[in-house]
Length: 333
Image 1 (tube, rainbow, N blue to C red):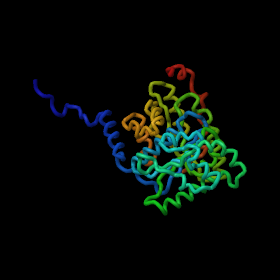
Image 2: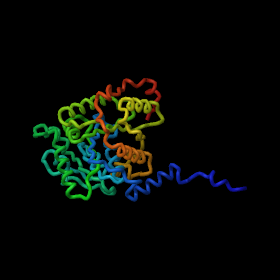
Image 3: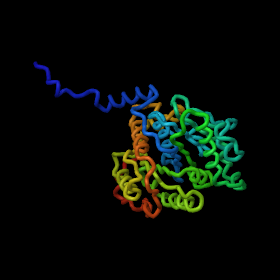
Image 4: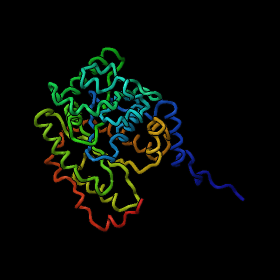
């Protein structure tokens, strides 16, 4: 029997398993692929959606880790009293730890609470503690209550420029699932809003209210605020429902939606219980590869030339616009 021609043999280095293994090795080495182009200035993005369970914290920590692994300097600000972002990054956030609460309420310098994340060079975190749960009430009586985070972040970036070799490239603010004063502080501090949207029936409800709040903050507190990025999460390619939700979102948000979608992944859900992002927990998984690609796409896009306004994205996608057959065909979890 003669040997098969060499041209007919499969390229074993270009299979999905080989690519995943190569990515895993690069993550373990501390860097993935070519460095991302640095933005012309520090990009500050608030990750917001008042609906819970859509992947805000998961998106924040994994995008931050993916950006850092590709050469960026990234700060995560955990503004959620639950402290899940701090947990996922392996940062201590018990009651005695200096936290973002001290920055907002007591005026403590942010550089005194920011800590480096173990295992990922260039990634930093300002943790949240349970004390933050009372900050909504305490902020009411404070002067300039809506802009306290913005002032603290501006002072921190000035300090970092003087005391570090390189400036921050990205700041990602993880918001609580509400539209209270903590979220308003985040919207005032950031020119850009990143909205994660779960590819399920109820996920579209409330997006219109979030956009109206963005416009209110833009009109009265932060004229540079705009929705720059929309990321589809928990995408299940087996269902027509997920495809229909994705189509609705892309129709209404057009160019702000990333081409990359994040699939449902057990590895993404498991990672926080080990105090890790999925980028280090299982770097070869589909979830990790998706966040790497989403981070690269977001970085290459840069800030949009023209801010997105509510008039260009309304009417907001509505859950009622999804037809009944698509819901019936979705398999039960």
